[in-house]
Image (tube, rainbow, N blue to C red; front, side, top):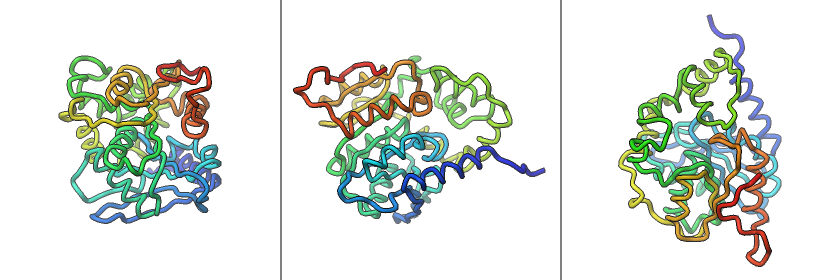
Length: 306
């Protein structure tokens, strides 16, 4: 018997309305070589405003992860919110699965739209893509913000117990889960996970958001981890970064520049859902009101944000 109501599909329609009300429109662009990218773009770009690119993590499509931030950011930027390849309405027929390929697809999309220079914010998996974009296309990036993105991850870290999962297969089972594993994901991702999560809602979310391109998403996660070494990670010169502790500190040492580390206390990996106001405040500080060196109290390296 077919379901007569889907909470997830209804929520998705509400998010579409919210993005539209914030001044964005849905577009689909063929960037060539069998790759099609979906992106939310400004209905009427303002040439006097800087351009801002928001890159989502693994999970639902971009709307679910950026909805709380689009409206206030769109008041200050021309905001672009793509679905990465194999999320939402973006896909490719090519075999590549690396974050380098994802970054190339995003740049091809922005080139087709007509955006040359941009600020880039990447969350979780989107942070890996954002870092790669800055490495490959540094002349296109003004400011870079990485949120909860352990780009300094090494393949050995999982084996040595840095993470609560012990293998890529276990990570896949949590990130692309069945209902019982969704609860595990919530416990890992949230500092204070929701206490009640009805199975019917979880199953509905999986049916709507987690079944399409399942094999391709598994390959994305596998590619992110395979043969990863810090010594192979290119360095950045001058970019801002916001991300959590152990891998964040490793990355701060690695980039050797003006990278700044900010920690939001009492927040887990799903910081966009758990602490959206605090996260926006930090984004605004970096992107809109950057601290000046002569003002007291503006050194943000390693500081905690309330």
